[in-house]
Image (cartoon, rainbow, N blue to C red; front, side, top):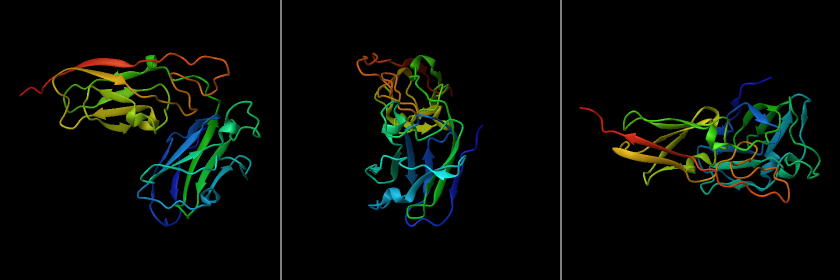
Length: 242
């Protein structure tokens, strides 16, 4: 069962408009943790912000009570709002009243016109307890200096981590997220210089359930954290033939 992600602008926004909601996929794991709402400009942050957000279970027709950790999380520019599902409910056996999301149900995350009237619809799949594994990732290497270097993942990853996750030497990188955050497209201003270049993962990444290659979100007390899992690819860039 799957519903297409829908982003509806229902009424004129009082400030900026919503330009994106992440994750962009329309099927989320039951233990999904974060939404990111990106606005076109700096936004106000009313004290009663969470009175203007709701999560509706479309399968039952009821609003999910206590769905959010009601602490506003904005980036410095106040153009991205992180909406955190209550971690005490999303983490197993914590005892905060059961999971926010039910497997097989359809939901609507709704933001009213106080910010920018918007909805995101999605359905819920099984819990994800499997850590991302860099050994399953693949790459599309650039054939020329202006071509992108693309890294593909075997699942959607958290959109907030991906822009900072990779480096190619000391080159400045432009990072574009791929479809459903299942890939990133890397380019560098002026094109790749000739010679051998090394792509590395230098920061953590997380999946939609906050599992990282080094640590599972549902890590049990007393268990050790996994060793770092590197991701490195060496490739050769050549100057264009004239």
